[in-house]
Amino acid sequence: MFASDRISPRSLGRLIRSASASVLVATVGDVVVGYFVLLFRAGSSRARLYSIAIAPQQAGRGLGKALLAAAEREAERRAAASLHLEVRADNSRAVCLYERNGYRRFGRLDSYYADGAAALRFEKVLSSKKRPKPIAARSARPSGTAPS
Image (cartoon, rainbow, N blue to C red; front, side, top):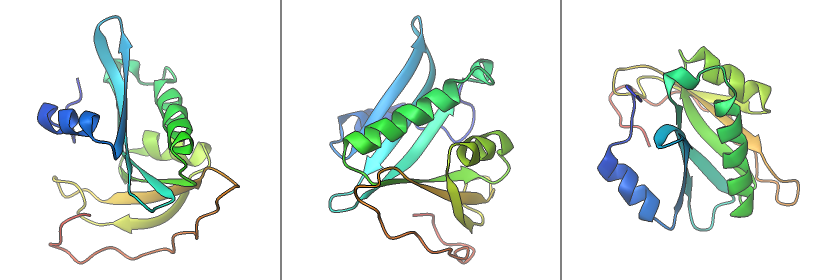
């Protein structure tokens, strides 16, 4: 179902049990059709959308938008003022989703994914109550270094 860049069942289990993560799974009947994982760091006003995925058969049906909205609500519920993420540069459907929903691109990471694909970095301010300092545009990390 989720053929690339997927989270292993063991890692997903750890994330589900972690106090510094929120996981939401979307199902149709007993079938998992999508999920998101948010990460939170103590003392930070930023949450990270670590992973969001939908099953290919759900593409174009609004599930990605619904999961993104749910992730934003959960981040705000956990007092995050902004949400940031990385997305494959060649995933035009996801890039468009983030841009249509108010995310601002602030960087690019070359060779970020296991297959060597680049990532684009995005951020969205969620709450006017706590405005984080915007992330400045950063250049790509040197080749051969591990992603953070």
